[in-house]
Image 1 (cartoon, rainbow over the protein chains, first blue to last red):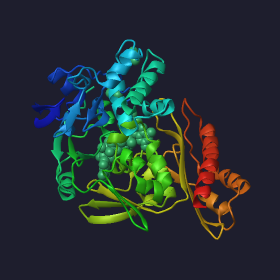
Image 2: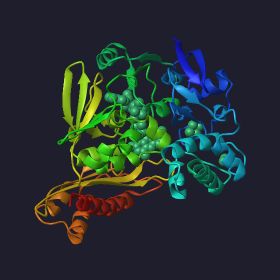
Image 3: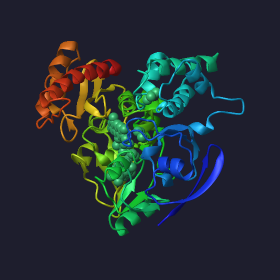
Image 4: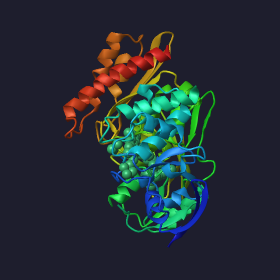
Length: 156
Length: 284
Ligand SMILES: Cc1cc2nc3c(=O)[nH]c(=O)nc-3n(C[C@H](O)[C@H](O)[C@H](O)COP(=O)(O)OP(=O)(O)OC[C@H]3O[C@@H](n4cnc5c(N)ncnc54)[C@H](O)[C@@H]3O)c2cc1C
Ligand code: FES
Ligand code: FES
């Protein structure tokens, strides 16, 4: 039996009918056309599918769409504001924080939570915070640099 | 990857969840879903129905009094790790929660789900044993309180019956607690995790317990450790001797490609020494 799911995605109210087994990442990508959350491993390891649910970073490949009923979801598409890129997006741009870009939406959304908790997060704290996000290209150096730089700008 | 088809019920109360578990054939509870959904995607688990208790009011949160902590079953690992009450009443428990998975996993996974799942690589079971936790569960036969040592039966097996829902956990206040882990670099689960509790009276160790997860199929209490530490002040030598006896409780240690059984036992003794030292210094 299908279930009705009402949620907010990037500030917009959405009302969809889904099969209980539909994963949140598939709702976002296939039904709502928001392909920013990438599916990398599909086994809860890589974090490329990370979105914010009620402000918390979660792996959308490991959530049922029905579990997101009533929640406020932010994907990478919804992060930039009227004044342009989000400071973390800008910092990734400025510090060459990506190469192929596949991991980047997940990295940035996880970084939102890391800096929410502590805008002055150190290199080591940022690395620890990114435990659930894998990057096959950059070697992480510039990702960490970008996040630390964004934090420094926020707290300045 | 898709799970196989299932029906979905969202329970509004514990009573409704218990009733659904008793009446819907093949139904399984889901809390955070961070053990169950990966298993369903791999089709290792194929429940025909899910009973979602994730939204039940009052099942989440942490309260503390002089005796200790009361933690609701739906409390996430992130909440336990960040809680000032937990850090002060039982610092080792906050360390165990902070050692679980990654930010995203800790935002979704719940203490009730972890205890019910009893994964051999999970971090909470050893801590529950060492810290003397009591688990409350409600089922078709009413409510009961279960000692952690009775809850964990075997790998992925607890003493809960099919209709029982864990509603909360009580943990006695204990400053002298610590949890240390060797995490698997890929999965992040515990290759070895050691929880230690030390209480002192007039400078002597009055109580001491070590719980180990990750080494054997089911978490264990390392009994001989307390024998060799109690009744005298804790010092480096005695802690070393006590920790060296942890292996005596680790019959049936499991080995895999990453760590042999012998290496796991060795890691358990090294971690026990460090965790006991940290717990003893906190106990004062
Ligand atoms: C990538 C990844 C890494 C992880 N790393 C770690 C780690 O390092 N350490 C660690 O300890 N864990 C780890 N986990 C597991 C995680 O902690 C899970 O959240 C936890 O084991 C289960 O909690 P849950 O709320 O998600 O349970 P669910 O997945 O919802 O349920 C698990 C099982 O328990 C049952 N159940 C759920 N709630 C209850 C209840 N209240 N009463 C009775 N039965 C119930 C369900 O029916 C199911 O059988 C990891 C998970 C992932 C995806
Ligand atoms: S695709 Fe979700 S964690 Fe890798
Ligand atoms: S930039 Fe390619 S995976 Fe990270």
